Image 1 (cartoon, rainbow, N blue to C red):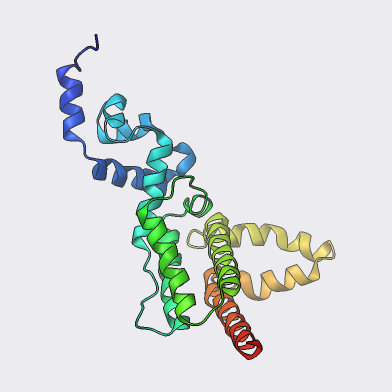
Image 2: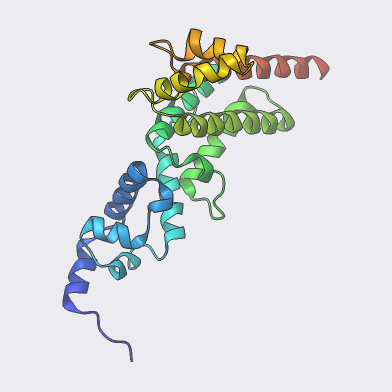
Length: 229
C-alpha cells in the first residue's frame, strides 16, 4: 500500500508550478550551462524537495524538452504580411537574440525526440514562408538546412568565444601575437593585430553579413528554379 506523502513534502509540491520550475531551470541553465543543471540543484534553487519536482515534470529529459519548447516560443516566426526575405530576416534576428540569452540551447534545438507544439509550430511557419514565396519542396529543404545550420553554428561559436567585455579576447590575442609573428603565421597575426584586437571589433557583426550571403544565394536559386519550370 502506497504511503501518503509527508505534510512538508505535500506542501512543497503544491507550492510549485510547472511554469515556475521551468523559469527557474532556464535561469540556472543561462547562468551555469545545461550540463550542470540537475533536478536536485533545481529543487535547491527553488527551496523545495527533489521529489516534489517530479510531481510536475517526471524527468530531466522531459524538463529539457520543456526548456527547448520555451526557447522556441520566444523566437518570432516569419511575419506572413512581409515578403519572404525580410520575413525570414525577422525570424533569424529574433532567433539570434534569444539564443544569445539561452546560449546553451543551440545543440538541443533540433535533437529532441518528442518535439512539442511550439517546436512544430515554429518549423511549420518557416516552411510556410518559403512555400508561399514559390520555393519548391527540394529548395525549401535546402534553405531550412543551410539557414539553421548557420544560425546554430554561429550561436554556438559566439557563445564559445572568450568574452570581449572582460578583455578575454585581448588577453589571449596579446599573449599569442609574438608567437604568431615569429612562427610564420603572418596572416593570423595581421587579422588579430589589425582587426580582432582593435577596440570596437565584434564577432557578432559577421552574423548579418553571412545571413545576407545565404538569403541572396537562395533568391538566385529560386529564380533559376522558376526559369527552369
